Image 1: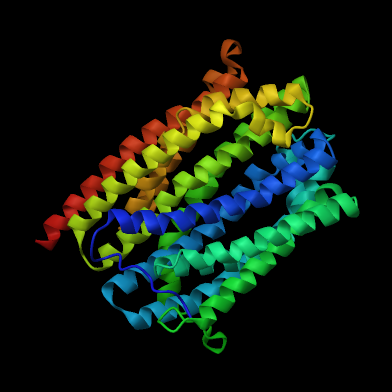
Image 2: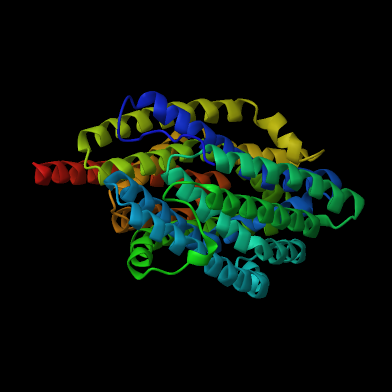
Length: 455
């Protein structure tokens, strides 16, 4: 039976938003520990090339998977809108549509990942000494995408209903299993990156099963009954209407990261694999800051969604300010802290490799200081999507993030004077600023229009 969920549409907001967000932050950090455990174990037991192999897959995995994770966002928003509006039957139909959609999405991803990983990595100019290990990691990783999709869809439903603790508990159990299996497969069985990929897949299976079990135990409209699973046309269309642009936005966003990773791979071929391993370790550390900030995006999405369903627009404006201030403080504090302790943090991943640490610090310097801007951008994306507008943030992100980064990479970055890692990383900051400013203006315009139409 679920614990009592907070009422997002009534009462004080600051305390509720903070208490709602903390479990999401912890859940996101725990998810990152999956990959961190992979990197730490292979870094200590297998060497820098194995670290580079695991890191080289991140942008590509996100590119492939994010499109379908976006559908889980659509499921969550649809549930939240229906809860806020008091439409119980719509909630039930959405839940019983979302789980079959998760199964189908996971099966499709498994086929794509297993059969095409090697070709995708070659297209990214992955160094030849890294390619075999990276390909092995991806193929095994994608064998766990069905339970991964179940977890993502199930978590979105629970969070839309106000339950952020259950996903945390289930991921904790899966995280413990992941660490144990990492050590067993890599240290005992000497399986290298294949071992950490297998550990991740099995751990995802546990979290997926636990989330389904929790949905089946609920006693409200979000209760899942396996015999009632069915694709309801209206609910599926709504999920796709909101979720597909969200997923497409994430995938297109990931395209720019794939191209940036390809540019980094160029430096790896010239300067050595230390560039890749240093970049990979720095990205993993950044992930802990990012997921803490992105948690406020999920909070703004779900609080806005329920209050939009209840037509409480003044409350939505307060949600905006609380989330923006909170994400700024979180991003600035964590970014500065991570940069201050950059060298010892990188040393956890990169054992006895000063050259790799040097390249990791270059990335952290250019990303961590302005990282709060990325958090502000993500919160405004969540706010707009919470109002049921999913195409707009997608278009703004494509132009503001992807367009600027690609323009920079194929323009400024190609000038010999600026063909450096530092110049490459600077493209992130410019894209964050431009996208945040435009999204905030668009959100305020939509909100004012909705309030005017209400009156």
